[in-house]
Length: 333
Image 1 (cartoon, one colour):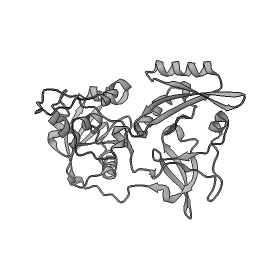
Image 2 (image 1 turned 120 degrees about the vertical axis):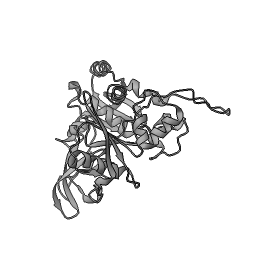
Image 3 (image 1 turned 60 degrees about the vertical axis):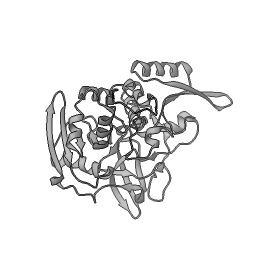
Image 4 (image 1 turned 180 degrees about the vertical axis):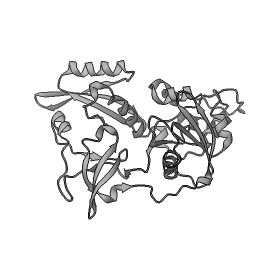
């Protein structure tokens, strides 16, 4: 099964679109004849080895009470002033402190490490240093070594929330030195179900409610919170959603702004490069002034910001876009 999960998580949008398949409703007594393949979400939460930003659109300054730092590349491309900012998708470390201000260095996402650094108000930082992990709540059920080590954990703490699981992930990786993919459950039976290729409706819902966290070898300092609670979970009547419904049901939309070009042919070539990497894109044409058109290459929309960030992380690894300063926004134009 984990080959299927790995494919779903990392190599393509095709595995993800099954989230949005529709199911028919009936007043008849339901017979569990249909079987379902567990589908995992991609949204993530950062660990506590660094600080997380507690809100979106936090501007970065050149000094305490100083000036906002201009995003030079975005400003030159778009023809209007843009400023460096960090948001809830970022993890940062503290370099200096001065009064109510801290000097930060962005460490996640990696493509912002050289640019998104400076001073912000300390009140916008959050970490999980107050959360204590009790090792007696942790039981390693089994380890499977294939191409990647897969570790199944039973976690019996009854006061679980997202921050607790982020702290647990750090504890497992740092204190217990576990490496590979880590799957955390609060019921042992769920760990048995996750090995099945196909699940009945009742099994799917049980797995979704008790498969509480997943951390992959590719992004070891992050977790996927209740990874099987997705659109399919809602369609099947899941009643114990652990986060805001809009994260699953698509009440908001997010786009990846890949790059902006002044030449339409270059923009079309960029779309071809994305298409060759199995990423569907489009071009938005807009007028900067009376004599200038720009061509924005974008990807999306996505239903969560974290999903859009996931695809941005794939895009910036393509050499053509390594220096494009791609970003995610809920506004397309």
